Image 1 (cartoon, rainbow over the protein chains, first blue to last red):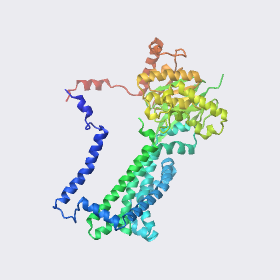
Image 2 (cartoon, rainbow over the protein chains, first blue to last red):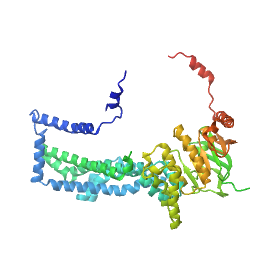
Image 3 (cartoon, rainbow over the protein chains, first blue to last red):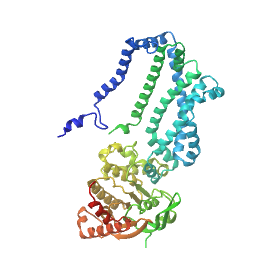
Image 4 (spheres, chains in turn green, yellow):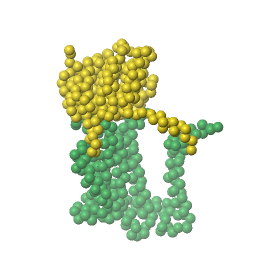
Length: 269
Length: 279
């Protein structure tokens, strides 16, 4: 005989659910176990701290960075670059993506070229960007823009294309004109998917920030990591990478919170 | 002789797919009187949905005309509302907001006086009550069952007082019990509102129970094969499904669909499969 209660309760059911507490516990374990493992390996003395510093060393170096160096300045300039590059991408990609996803001629005109450019590695544009834009802030922002914009346009166009035809046709039979269909049906219908697209591309913006700062900067978190490499300050490299990861995590959670806050109808059951 | 509400004349629809041409509809002719309830049935590929969509103005015909009250149509219009099988509600709007959606559109806003706005509010309330949606007015569509969602879709379609209601397998995704409730509801509404109904379904029982006339369509090429008058009084009830007339007509239409579907069971092959050893 099969014990149904066990099957129903088990989190191992395909696509099963966990209780809130169990979920939190397992998630915490997933975060803390690797840290503990890192600590154990590095503190054991088997590995030279040059290759693998201990967590306290990394925290010390971050503290030192904050006290003696310019950690806040580095964070500020990096966040500024990411946000500016990302916003410029979004401001252009939103209308263009909506238009590509809605009108066939615009799709036919823009999609092939966008598809083509998005396969070009953004990092390879750095020499060109330095030549054209110079080496100041504009260059880093331009790299982030190149890295995110073309992907963003195509993903937003796809979000828009996924609006069910029935929603559009229902509006047509109720007397909506073209602009009304775009503004009152397509945009609100695609909004949640578009916000998710923005969340994903924000992650890429952080990646391209580091690329830009590694190659062409004299400030910022990515630059600090590069400079630490020159002096073999492994602990500072660790601190920089972890900080960038934390900022990414925080931004991602902000986007998730915005999603829940802006689209309550998706979460109400 | 009064003008028919819907007049379909010599309607053709051809689709180009690569280098071959599919005839979705060939020489369709049909005339529907005001307040008449007509259902379209037929094997898949017979063009019943295509015909409905052309009448709705959502697809152009290749040739021929559709007229509403004597005027040829050239696209969608608020005189012809449409209810789809699913996905047509706006999930970001509440039930009430969905039903009142058309009030936001220029077409309805520009012409309305304050009295109209008030009347529209009254109409929305009346439709909510008629459809039994009073207790879910502030809910979002994804909080509702499939049957309740279709009630919202019907109420929304009726909001602008369309003369014609086009329905494309609206109850196809509902369970049998919910469907029966919806049948009586839509019959009630059609009599109350004097709406002309053109209704596509694959369910012959549904087609007969709802309609004054059942139009049988056939595939390859898509065409109108036959039209059956339903010999039942206007006020229907579920018991009528057991009457001789009902069952005889159902048998006749099912035979018609079977004969035109182009799908025959190969009895010899079945025999072979049955006799073959299991491995």
